[in-house]
Image 1: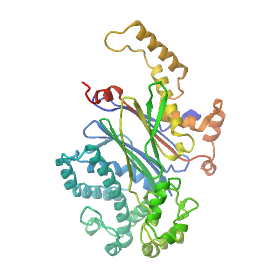
Image 2 (image 1 turned 45 degrees about the vertical axis):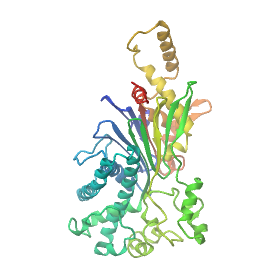
Image 3 (image 1 turned 180 degrees about the vertical axis):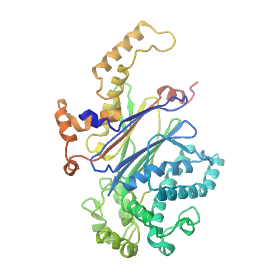
Length: 462
């Protein structure tokens, strides 16, 4: 029963095309909230060798995270300089939420507008040979994060305010498109109003990795985490944590927040380690009750959602941003995989534990397959070493073929003496109104790198 629950949402994608740095991807999700507030999205770009891997941890409901899973990767792909105008920017491997037809039409219209508006930026970057491709990727990630968050805001405001919207916008986006509400949709459509407002009032943190050739560029907003697992010379596993979470435990992030508001707000802008005493992450998509001007919340939002929609001590908004922090990592042949996950995993396991578990799982999973000899001359010593490694792997043979499922099982059931199946069963059978006290939603992506590909990408390699 426990294994059935753990494996219900697991997927494995094997890359079959040559010339890709990623050879396979495992992913899985386990709900705590009902409905699940996490989402994920995985896509291959139309160059057939670049990938986008995204985890989105929602709060205040699943709406914002679901919208990010549906829309954000397309916005990133459209912003990349190598993606010329095309009807097929990405091949998305993960299913996305199907919204009402009115909402689907809105999102398609908005994306087409955005796609057209960034074409000048894409073409400029494509023709600028002085720009490093990694720098272009960084710019595309930041542009897409900012743009989608701004569009989520404008979509909600348009259906709340109609023609009055233009008078209250405090920021003008860097791109210039004709406001879609001018002639595309009725400004007071109730379905669209409720959908766009629920997305704007809920929130989500995001961690998206762009992997191409030997470059991994991570955009992180909030408290999801990503870690690269590498194999050291002595055969032990090491973890490279990519960036830091945007919470009150990040001193630099706290200082950034303080610097953006008057000194007399230092006692209120961060209270009980939360933004305005309420929100744990200090960066997030949505959550526009921490971003919109106070009079907008008072006049248009609180009549619908109540006084609680206005945070206490709300004096100098915006207090929150979706602007991501960018971390760049050059992959080496020793780098074997990257794990991206919501904080439901990291609350239970450290980056070092996660890497060790995935590394051991790699050895065990290889042992489950047939023994194949490498091409070329093979000595008896080589065969003996292969058999020795296989015996070691069989001793660590995992219960799950999916590494993400393997991590969830160990996160819930690990004890000092090993896995406790009774503990696992108990945690998986808790009622909905109790389970959130013991664990959060867990979403995990594990992407494995092709070592042979990375060896060939080394400088001076033939």
